[in-house]
Image (cartoon, rainbow, N blue to C red; front, side):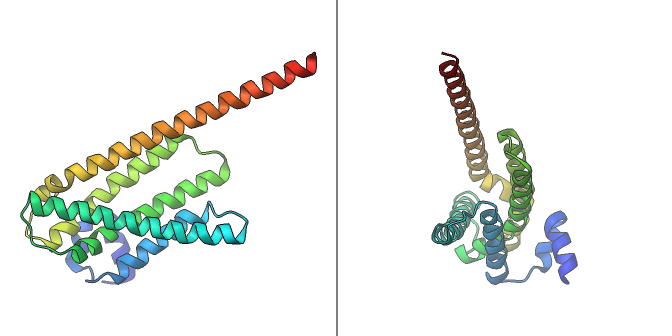
Length: 198
């Protein structure tokens, strides 16, 4: 499978992709590394030492999140589907979703360059990316187990619901903080104007 078809199938025909996808962790790990670097690129501070710490912390955080998601999915297919697969296999197939996450991070970063990102826009992007990743997880896990895609979806539904809940909670917190900051700035400017008038 050439690179052009591999990208096309991964993004739009996951069943076809995993029928011919290369085995092993190298490619998913490189894709995940690329995703982490794209995510960090738009928030790197000017100070060199702080930038280095940000990059290292960001990469470690993304890889830890990848491992946690793979672990949750593995627990789901083993407990509910009685499937036989290893953590390494689960890590490999779930890592391919990082390609979609990278697209989402790139879009969010580009929007952020234009101006302040509305929390609702951020939520919409995260939601779209999450739902776009689901077929990657389903057909990827189906390719390393004997489970049909519908059964796989049932097995990983609880972790997906948790991800959706975390995304919504993150949106609520971000929206609340943004609103509080706006109110604080407004009250501060108002007080300043009143002081000057006196």
